[in-house]
Image 1 (cartoon, rainbow, N blue to C red):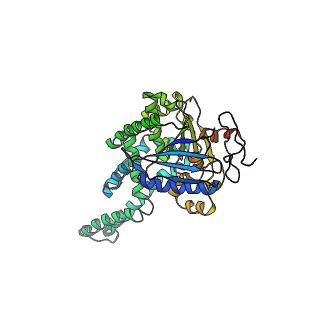
Image 2 (image 1 turned 180 degrees about the vertical axis):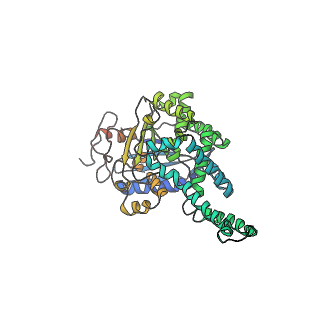
Image 3 (image 1 turned 45 degrees about the vertical axis):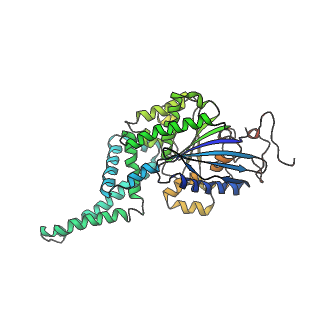
Length: 408
């Protein structure tokens, strides 16, 4: 099916990018898409809306096709800003609370048996914290090491506290320590519903998504969930399924889960509501769940199947695709990301530089429906010719006709 108009609803994970900044990043991905497929895209500014949301309009023209996209951003950067404003001690204590909660509830074991790579991401901030605390403690006991009197603790203890605070900022900042501790603190609050703003944002997301689905006349709807953004995306879809299920049947609706951290929350014993939301989406809706995983990204559950992991028998099984970023991006971009697991995780959101099966720009701005690209054309590049023209393929079927190469 040729898509002339698409509604894209983008749910981002734990990051501090507000809608305007998300626009800037997305336009870089669009530029990659335009270069790769000889297309031209124009975009309006991002207009801020309620609930941390924003929207913009994009028009992409290829050699013999044109696709209009309404791109809506769903984020919680304003709420995550509050986590970052807390004192160092507060960020440290709540992060460690989250660590112990994951450890003693058996959730860590579920991570390990599902995707061992994710354990590396989980342990990183807490291992670094213990190292820095150990260095601060070493400074505190210098009087004992040197055989000095207890009176010397009057300077060693304050020095240890000051050193600990400095270490939390550097090298802690360089290695994302505080950011990751905040990430896990927010995850704890999601699991235990301990943040009233996050709880309220769920309803705001569902209301905004309901309005967009009701108003749109798009040929298809693509709901993107990157990283932890898959959680609110699934929650919003589940809420609509319970309240206005007909909105999910107006036109094809797909969930594009990329680098998903859904299981980071769903595996916790207290996350029963989220597991029920996942079951609702998989069993009670016709929403296509298309998930992409990458071997070199440790910030998601590589080699997993969310339906199997949560013991769900879905109406439509998730379409799982596993990719290699080195086949998507050029060598220089891939090498820059290899030394930084955050950059590697964000490669999901960058435009493809090589023609291949994972093409973020094609999924959101190309002329083909996502469902066809991940099923009929699975593991292949989109069927455009070298000049970016439509080919004679089932994916390029119009209403009662096939689109042939221009000039033939």
